Image (tube, rainbow, N blue to C red; front, side):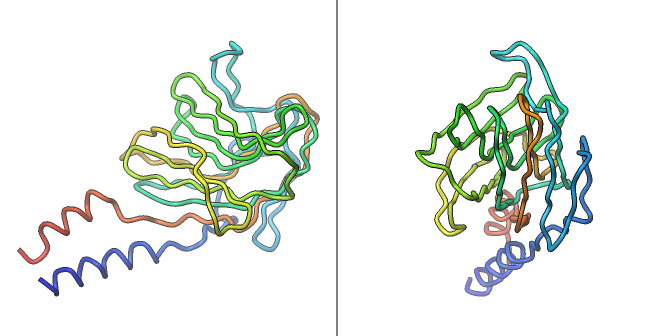
Length: 219
């Protein structure tokens, strides 16, 4: 029994610790902006004016044309990034996006609305919804983290990459590859500068497989 438990623990440790920071140079663009660069493991861009991701609800229109720099992952994972933006106009935004296709995605980060900074999450399945947490003061940067487990994605924010607070739990189809990466949009304005630092994606061992191993190893 002790050997069985030790073996399972070793498999979990290897799976969890084996995730390395995603190489920005190996990722690809969806709606590439005109101005961007990668330097010192940091992606900087000038966000395309009049661009966004949204489907139908409340406003009655659909747009799918903002910059998104991504890689593709299957299974379960944790992704996080530090975001610093020079937000200027209403709805200027930057954050993470997890995307299956144009009808199924989650974007989460910081959004500038009516002079205030908001922690913002948009969940889209056919139509989009929007939830916000208003911040009392401006912030120099924010950390955003998303954890995909089975058919759920938990989204967190942090001001120091130490203490994380959940801002949303949303459904996302499991057993389906997901485009994961860095998104910024400028629906109303003429563009703004934003940078993404310390981007990483860490593989998480599949919970159902771990349960199977727990029940079957050594039998």
